[in-house]
Length: 540
Image 1 (cartoon, one colour):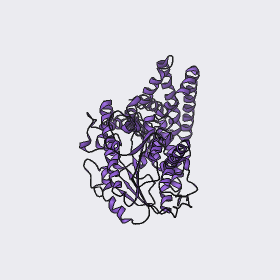
Image 2: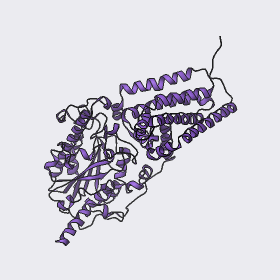
Image 3: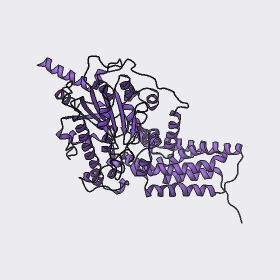
Image 4: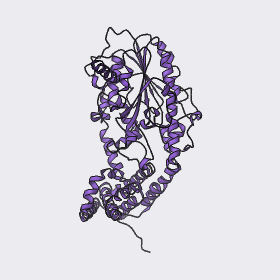
């Protein structure tokens, strides 16, 4: 009986074909959609598939040499199966920012994305092919022989890809120029590159204490009024789902009765919590921000503490993403601390005991940051108590692709309705402290969310290709009756002006009247409103 064995090159070619055919459905779905706009699109799509096979052969030939062949393929099959599930189901992209999100997520968020379908992907695209590879009889090779074979395969794959591109050069010249984003959907090449970027961005050693900023920060001596500001950091809220911004469905019944200003044209710093939350408190604007610089530099909270402000961070999300490392922080994701928990712990629980905290601080200004769970997906149905299930029918699962667009939209709108209720409760708390403080609330979401538009779900796409639904966020402010340093009518004239998370750092400095050289009045909403009011007086 003849015993058949395979060469390592044959195993690599077979693995490349398998990954192309079964782990790249999202890639081919997007390629076919893009090819519809080009002549002979479906024929060229086959060429794109062949180029992908050659590319994967090239990548695998570089990664799988000698004894690393089987272990590396096992790892790649499992990782590509996970990536394929999320790309196929939600049309998301696995880049380095997405890996950052994964690294800082918590068990509750992990549970929300675990589905039977994910298990099926892992079994069929990850575990079974990995078992097959482990059991395959592969002819042994010496290191020199393996390197020579792999070099020949890599060269053949490279020449094959170049030949295919040359034969359809007109198509590829247009295709690569018009559809650059498609490369993000290749699997596992994009996750491999993302992992490299993620690892290379992490510091090799403890960076030590953060670099100090605004060391000259101080309040004016003549200011005897105490400020009490509550900043609510929202989660996954879209500006276009706020009726305050013109959404036809009444998702803000309570805030609409309050004297609030809702800014309708606000851009987020990123498309994920791990990027946007540190960015909104950083001294850097979006164009100059990076996670590394944020970790190595003090943020807004450090500046406020230095100026004598009492700062407290309460979190009902995963955590502060490094922002509150040097200020008091309280976790409200557990019934041990949050007294309002049913299906999960509610944002309202963060308000319990806050009055005691305020009463305890008899001197100095107070900033309280409340980090919401908000509208975090995909399990939107968990994000609100039962009495807020106003819009129906709803999507009662975390598998969004088995729900209709109407069900997903209804469920998401119920989360905004609950946020509206929560913010009204924040205003009630502030209003109860009007006698002793100049009170104000500032609410802004970290990023938006895709709800199935163009086949996209959730968030986290690279900023350059992210739709407005992921970058356009709500921003609402409220001032108490003794906050006399703001002209609301002038501020309302700014509601449709382009703003961003870049405004938050300087606006909060303005709220507390902090003097420092790093303060930029052109980014402070209070000062911008004063400028509008001053221009009106001059005109009159």
